[in-house]
Image (cartoon, rainbow, N blue to C red; front, side):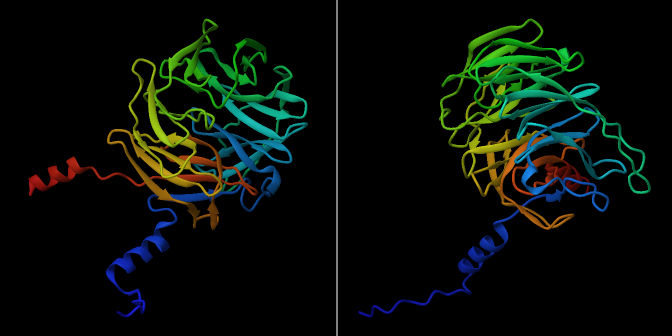
Length: 377
């Protein structure tokens, strides 16, 4: 009996298929990514590499993006990607801060929650108007930012904007607080253990994790804080802090446990059954496009993008982020995400020389339309 090893046929159909999957399936398999620098290309320089970890994003009703960075210093910026724009404008460095954990946009002002050696503070500034034409002429003012001071002596964990009351609702390590964006008043609203991100529900109440197996619920209009209000579904919830994505149209929330199992949450219906599981864990930033699909990143250090179709429960691995437009760059670590004005997903890169990554999803085929057209022939 011969013990000579049989040579592997690299030209076999199976081998060619595997090679093709490795070569062409590692990076983006669907849609298009564009990595945009933190500057006005050709007119300004990006935020310094070690100060440009993008860790907080929000978007105004007219589609202008605001963000905050972390690193050696914290910055806030505004970004515009529709009309005759295409710019990220640095609004300034926050003195004494090295981390931005949340940013929220109101009707005329934004608020950023930053941390530093002295604890957590809230910074506010006026919203920028949409410029006339950034191809032929440009000019921006940089109005001074207003420091509202500390919430308490604790670091801020996260915050969201609550439109009906025009307030920011946030958590520190052990407190729930509110901040009126117009008056600048900060008030303590209750005692909770601030862990992970919080979210605005379908009826505009605010939710966050309460211990190992529940959510607390807060009603900003009345100031009522309900502890252990909603039980979490069965899953692995203590491994990682909560992340959320919100469907802008329905208000439905999406989250994932420590194993990458995805769930939806509606204030009337509660949590869904498990929708599916991502290839890697933990699940990072996510956002929901206009057709209801959820896009996000999963895994540490070298994250892969996924797409979840809530109706079918299908979760697809879309590969590692890569941009061949605007900037030729790989993307491995992301800090936050928002849905853009036209349904694109905007991710903030949490890495040195961080970029804003605009993801344009593949347009889904309309099978019913195809069938109708076939019946006409």
